[in-house]
Length: 107
Image (cartoon, rainbow, N blue to C red):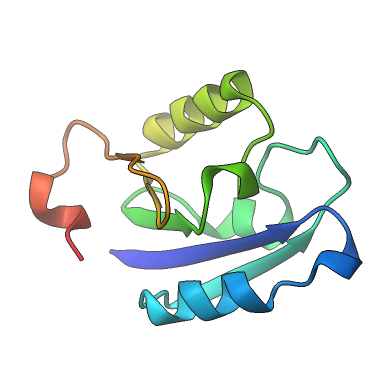
């Protein structure tokens, strides 16, 4: 199982350094960097192509992944269908597909 990080900002001026530092410290094998226009709540490009079943996706905060609760729930549903585990470093929220062991996300 490979752990990937996603560092995302809405504008280039925001900078990714804090997120990159946190994600690298959490042991991510690779960190995807995205500068997206405001309102984008989906994985794009290489992250979308790479992250599949039996992988873990980590973000620093939920708002780095989705812009609304509805978008977050839709993404989590997509992850579950793909067999992707999800974890937020700063928020007490994580998911794992039902067929995965409970200890798979322990840090």
